[in-house]
Image: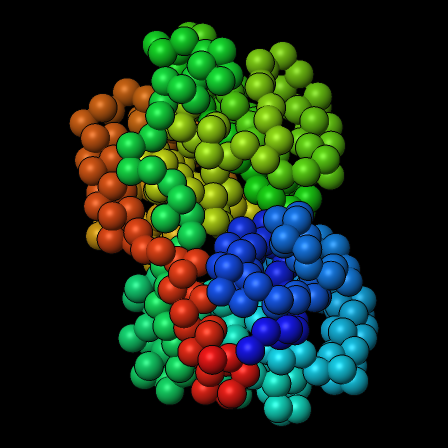
Length: 387
């Protein structure tokens, strides 16, 4: 059957990547399919009818969400009502569980099949949310292999599809080509600094990351600093902090060029998040830092909401933690800089990291978009919506 309408909501740049890959694959198989909802530039480029900019949902942290809660609830009510008045044939929520699970529950109760793409981190914190997932979704597409066992134990139907980045990125990264792109010689030490994809992250991490880069520059002659920025909003925050904290630091900026930056780097200083997964796929030694809103961090500690020893995806996927992690008060140049400098001087440790990250990459390589489309079309067929 052709002419299907699929509602879809993504809230992050990483969700835009996953959703657009799935959309492109579905369009190959269902040429007349139409997409509508909220998404980023990649999704819009595929002809999606965009109702709101993706950035309107990009909020992270307990306290930060509370600050935006009235606006987000109003937006969700409006979108929910629009789809209840004119139901799509299928709804796909891409990540953003706090926004999408409630929307999925309402649509599923109204008879709309629902898919959630990316398992919420219920295996790490707020495990009680798995009940919401079970009530909200007909199918969950999981991107990491260890999630399927957890979901099966909680009676959530899921399919492991891998992550599209693992399929896209090569096993052997072209370091010399990336350096040529930035005009950097092969023997120059290069530090990649990734302070996050949200304005709130960059505002908290730019200071300690820049101070760390300054400290490393004093120890490493000719150190080059590369910084990929997500958009102009984060770039403005970064540049303001650069002028304030490290006006003399030679920094090369690029826009939406994370893969090239990591490929050119010797070491990566990175905010926790999807970027640590990209660092793993790039086979680069990483130092991970993160700062939450102080009240958010206090609540998490008080109620012991996080159950894992490590918080970066690179460490969760590896057989052992290889990326030093520094959170909150520990995310400071006095601790970050020695960890970064260690990787510049410890070639044996770097080789161990590269070998382990290559092993994980091989394990994760799948045809993600095709597998995700297979699972979605199987659900459509069960409901008599595809042949």
